[in-house]
Image 1 (cartoon, rainbow, N blue to C red):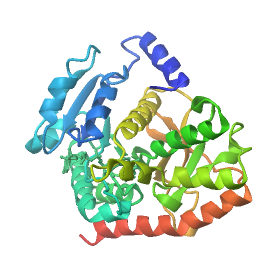
Image 2: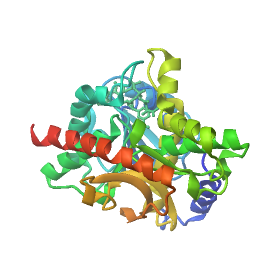
Image 3: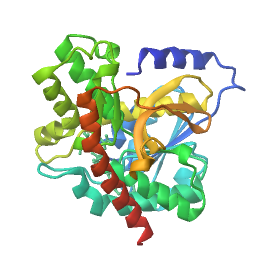
Image 4: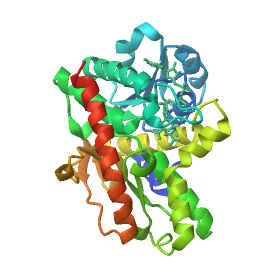
Length: 338
Ligand code: NAD
Ligand code: LMR
């Protein structure tokens, strides 16, 4: 499930002496859910995870008992609803897939009213019990939940912008798969940078910067861009009321967590798109933006510029910016008005 580079690095990490290799505890908040369960399983098979802490308001001890039988070295422990702080103690990475998913006809923003307070309360707990942890936010609407986490940590006086990440990896995974399909190329050779945010028009795939993708044009280009931007809707529709993407999201979440862990372990050159506090479009009032980010021992090491765009990509970016700004402001206002 990991990329070739990730596998090479995982293999190399096995060769680290025990003293140079970090013991990394990872906590999953929302571990009993559709994403949380397979994500916990995939994290159990990541050799960079030494200890796995599974928390949910329901079902986490059962998931933990199940996953703990997998024959990898990491320890697994499940925590019940009243054990949140204990679950977080010592965690270096906290992944948050807690919250409700979409049903057909809903936008991600329609989840705001329910998920904003869930994410805010979990972020406050991370601020209390694991203030140094990297926080990987999966719960939607990501464009708003990331600012909610940041503002909550600011209130607690423990905000480090290098350590708060919106997980946009599923957009990158979809872009590679969908473009690979139409160009008849292996998705692993079709890695496409996706910038912006994580909802419809805020998802901006940059095909022009990938050798295997830059030849896509005309109707095929418009169709595949639309499919990347609205891939989530395909799954919501197919699941017909039973939720949204869970398995592909668990794959994407584990892949991104592995990148963060490799960075924390001191591996150089780990670069992937993620939604972070970013200077790239601050002049347009957009405080958070997804672009290629180099990960390191303290989280975000370097934010890469988005590079040269085609006229079509410039247009996508133009449509992204005002929507993203609105989503970010909504998240910030939720915390400041509380
Ligand atoms: P789900 O309903 O299957 O699972 C959510 C879990 O969160 C449940 O087990 C629930 O008990 C738990 N939960 C609720 N409140 C909690 C709290 N206060 N503390 C801890 N756990 C709590 O939903 P799902 O399909 O796993 O989706 C979860 C979220 O992820 C949704 O908001 C969905 O939109 C989002 N999502 C994001 C992406 C992405 O690309 N970032 C992709 C897919 C889904
Ligand atoms: C996705 O992109 O699949 C997720 O954000 C879930 C959704 O609501 O579409």
